[in-house]
Length: 258
Image (cartoon, rainbow, N blue to C red; front, side, top):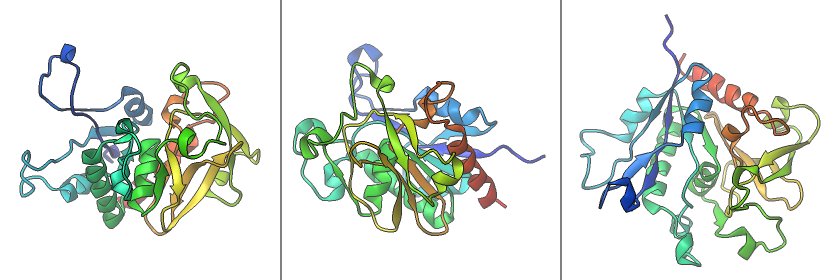
């Protein structure tokens, strides 16, 4: 009997939990339930991959390569900002400093997947992290650095904030969806790709301002990423069906383990 696919999910990291959670002076690593369940609906096993930090787990005991060997694919979920330090800039504001610890861990995970040929899917922050890993940069804050852009985040509406995207012709996304090139997605991000990373192509942009909404890496390894949260689309009418995105990724995961 063929075993189920094993998909690794990078953790969100809470370095300073609120006191009411009862973890004083501790660090929490966690995942958001919706993204795990979105993947699991296809009969896939999801494993969170706790970060390895210096002073914690000895690298001789657990290595990133060991993690990647045991999974069939990796999903980089959303969360805290990517640190501007990770793409050679200084934070313009303290609140945009991001999570450098998570950046370093996820970039190491990403490159190990590329080396081992394991497919990678990035969501929101995951898209930005992949772009930075490929040598690109980000708008630290869209409203500040690209004032002509539409509003890409609304704290009151959260995942109910939406806009249309244009899927590029001849892209893999165009193969997955109907010819109509305008689709509605959610929008929950104040950062975005500024300089596109090397060896990657744009597959979708925001219809009104050209902000990059989806990318794919060239080469043999399957790497794709989306600025929106496809896991929040499941079962929601009027939004781009997230099923084809997930099925394409899982097909690549199944193919690589042959």
